[in-house]
Image (cartoon, rainbow, N blue to C red; front, side, top):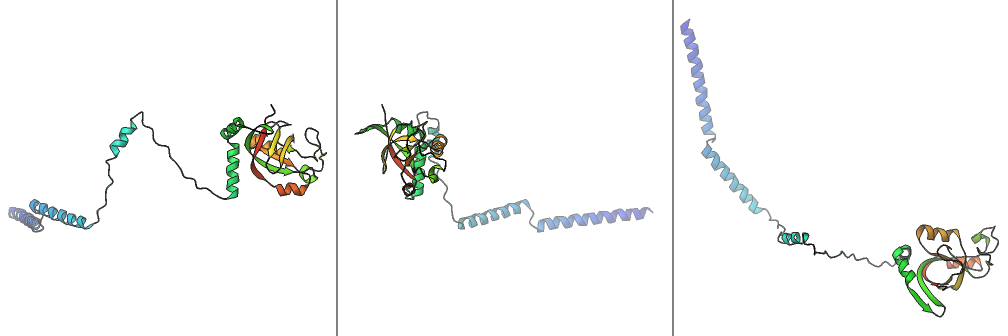
Length: 229
């Protein structure tokens, strides 16, 4: 019985030794030695460097100006130059009228125009951009219930002007290019709405006939507002 156990252990030992020798032999034959591995890595690095030399080189941005910019960042006396934008002139009449409307509603422009007085044969006046339309006392312009008189009781069949009385008092003399000088004696919903909501001076010149009002249309122009003092 013992000799069978001895034979079994010897067989197992022999098989283990055979597998061990085979593994060591395969490790050496497949170049897994540390010295061989170092040589393989060196060969791969040379191959990569040769391939990189073939690729086009990309110029890297220069960082020489970075210290100067950083120095100005902490300088209290440094003031950057303001950005300047070039706005090309547009000959479109619709855009020109929109620009004039924007300039008319600007409070800075309105204050500058209000304080800028000039003098002519009719007295002291200031110039201001305004929206100028036209109307007549007919039923199409004033409605079928219109009595034919203005807001202050004057006849609507004589020349006159309509505006917002909060901004331009009744009796103020205004010169409108193409119409002449007249007095504000009437008002209307459009005049009050444009001034109180949008800040646009709206003048409505009064014509005698309806076709004259239609020919006038809608214009943006510089008017003269005279000082009554």
